[in-house]
Image (cartoon, rainbow, N blue to C red):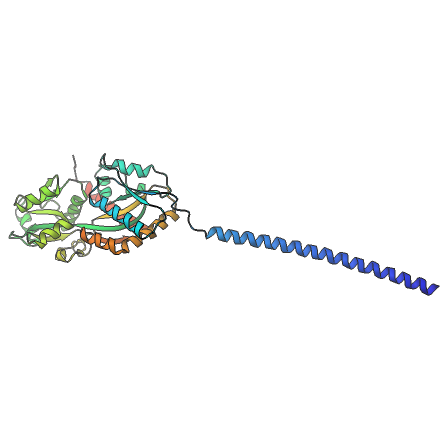
Amino acid sequence: MKKKLMIMVLAILMMVVVAACNSNGDTETSQNNEGQETNNEQSNEANNSDSNAGAELEFPTQEIRVIVPYDPGGTSDSTARVVSDIIRKEELLPENVNVVNLPGANTRNGLEEVLNADPDGHTLLLHHSTLNAMNAVGQIDISYEDYELISQVSHTPSVLVGNADSEFQTFDEYLEEAESNPGSISVGITNIGSTTHLAYEAMMDAAGNPDAFKVVPFQSGADLVTAHLGGQVDLRMASTPDSIQYVESGDAVALVSSSYEKHFHPSLQDAVSFSELGVDTGVSVRFGFYAPPGTPEEVINYLDEVLAKVVENEEFQQFADDNGAEPEYLNSEEFIAENESVQNIFNTLAENIDIE
């Protein structure tokens, strides 16, 4: 009887121990499962965070407007339109790029349209170094610094040309004559305070005799060409396309190029470069794109990459060549640095220029 009672007690104790072990096992399993779920949640959150950080930029979300502060038909307008066409053909952006001409108020209408636009990259400005010149001489109180600069796409230097029939065939010869006989050599320019005018002033300042030539302003390039070919002025500051045309026809001689290095066009490479004159930078009409102040850096970088591809495009290369420009891409930082350099030169030169 005692033996049976002992067996029953041992059996009961074993059942209690097993139950306790199962209970602890369930608790540990539950704790392990909870821990695993927590780890999974943390892992998922981390993955989602990485996914969001690497998500593509949500831009553009609508049509992009490129504002040109000039009438249709000019170089600014045609540059903006060929860029727009290439972006469309090559599908470089998921939205259309529409060129809008807003001339008037000495370019202020177009400039302010972009300044006051939402800084989201959907309204851009196509402009050039004239903005630097106009600001320097006080024609307008808007500066390149008021915008976010995206990139440069091309540039075109000015060229000082002489008459092919003249007894003087080099810049030094003209300068020597002018210094020997003050007022004997005249030079025609278009518009006091223009980029071309300031390029001329930079040239003469570097030559060491800013007042050597008698400056004669003209209202239009066509009037200036007529006056020069007719002998009314001895020299003229010409655009690159104009220079190429008359140098190749044998009517003019290229004397000085406002490019820093030798002029990119074969017909104009005999001209003295600005670096040879001792000027720290070239003074070209630099075409580029500007965005409203406050436009996010990631949007600027995205557009910068798109424009780099445009400049590399064969169609843009041909367009630039046909229009006497050099396709030259400068990224945002390089474009800002170039503007800063040119603005400093223009500001110094403008101190002695009266545009009234």
